[in-house]
Amino acid sequence: MGSSSSRLRRELKTANQAKEQAERDKQQAESDKARALRDKEQAQRDEQRAQTERDRAQTDKERARMDKEQAQRDAQEARNQAQQDGAARLEAERREQEARGREREAHDREMGAQRRVEEAQQARSKAERDARSWEERAAEAEKARKAADDERQEAEKARLAAEERLMRGIPPDVRPTAEQVQQSRERLGYGKHALNIALVGESGVGKSALLNAVLGLWPDDPGAAAVGVDETTAEVQGYVDPRHPQVKWFDVPGANTPNISGWLYFMDQNLFIFDVLVILFSDRFTQTIGTLLRNAHQSGIRTFLVRTKADQLIQNLKTERRTRRLNDALIKKKFVDDTQAMVYNNLMKLGLPLQPVFIVSVTGMRDLVTEGDITNVMDEQVVYQTLFPESQSPMLESTKSESVTSESVGQDHHIPVARSRIPLFEAVE
Image (cartoon, rainbow, N blue to C red; front, side, top):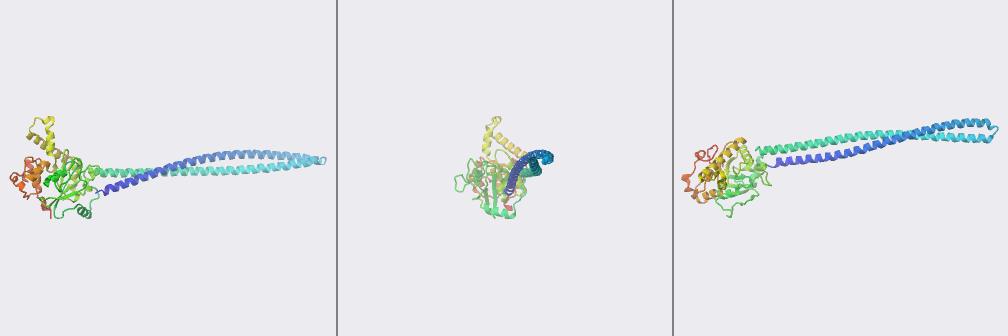
């Protein structure tokens, strides 16, 4: 199911938002720090200016003191001469008063300058504290940004790990509950008293076309599954088999399309609800096939591994330079051997149980089901009679004597390891 992937995406989005907020906080802290440093420099300049003014005031005060002393001397001299010259005495007194006034003014200027020096020192101390505060805030913002980045990286690692696990065929940690299984079955139309078989695989392997052939339908027949060059199945569709009402087929959208990722295919398409999965591939045995086999095996779902489009692939093989001199029988044998080797090697490499691989074509299956014609048949008859061991189809009666028994499957067919053919309907209550 997609809940694990959605949760990881939400966590990654939250982590990215936290990182962006931390980046903004860091930039704001750095801006505030720069402003605090400017304030600190301005306070230092103000302090220097105040000190200069205080020094000047002290110089003025000293000069005023000297003027006062000189005035006092002059006054004394004037008083000495006062008896002789009253006007000179008055002038000396006036000059003494002016000197005292200048001394008071110089003192006031000195005190003002001292006060401004103290204010400048306080402003500088505050600017230094603010600068340290902005540095601490910038460090905290950087720490928060780093934490957000670490969280985002952890979320990304978790997402990649989940994708890697799913691509390797490991089911998500969150398994569907019994209630979820029941809801999925009701939504998709699971037959309670039927054998529910789903055709699955990557887009373009011919799931819908093969389903029509098994049902004995042509693409333009009423009730047939839609077929085309591009992926035509948008959602899971159920079809009742007219020849076998106890069987319900399901056509499932293909994996690895823009809307359906291969590594989410098993859970997103609710493949865990079916009784049997017919897993189709054509050109190559891909990672998606291995993932489907592993998930089905771990979920206890029986599988059929089928290579489709055999007629087209064999025809392509005939045009290759290295096979031009081979006759049809040898080319067919080479195709069978190559298929068997490809499946065997991939199952071994992925650590999956060995199981049969069936080779079919839409033409061969439709000819077999509708007319009993085995001219173009490879494994179509084996597949059909394995699925329907009690089949009484009149079209198949003429070929019954030539049918491949369950015991001969491993000997006469292209199967890595034969397995017994237990009728599928025994598992259906």
